[in-house]
Image (tube, rainbow, N blue to C red; front, side, top):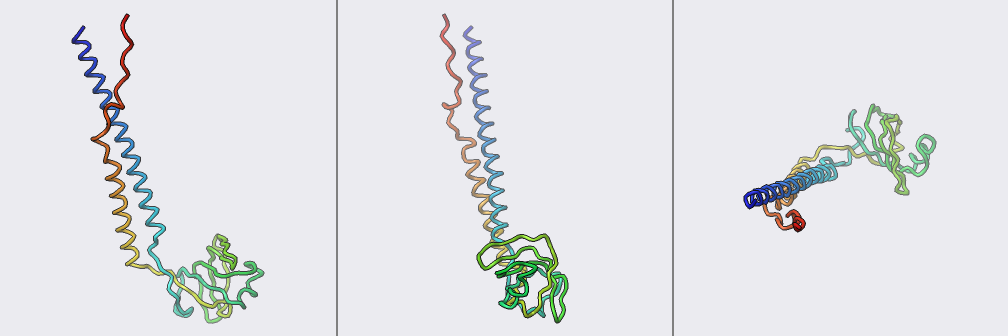
Length: 181
């Protein structure tokens, strides 16, 4: 009877220890997944591109551009786009001396509202545009984003695995058996 109690207590404590380690490992795994998600989000928000101003004649298709609309352009584009257009973003499809054609991805208005577009084509004359910015790859931003992402994921991973081998054993002990009568 005494041996059965000792074996039962040993099996119970082993089961409890395995359960605690399993829960800690699961929690740590969730933290690692969360850390990876946060790092990926930070990388996507930081961005690896800049939009330097360019002369319209220097930009060739298929460049991604952001065109600031002039006052004359607001009047001319009020019918196809809407009134109060501030900026039009999209991919340049064709460039000529008299106009550029864009596949529009977003239109921003003077009141701060932005409207997503599904690639509809729009023709802009040089008179309609006050400035054009072209999306270009930025090596320094990419390096900084990569360093921040790796360090952030590493820090959160270390924090996630911190309690793996140092859990509170008292919390996971099974309840005392009822008294024998």
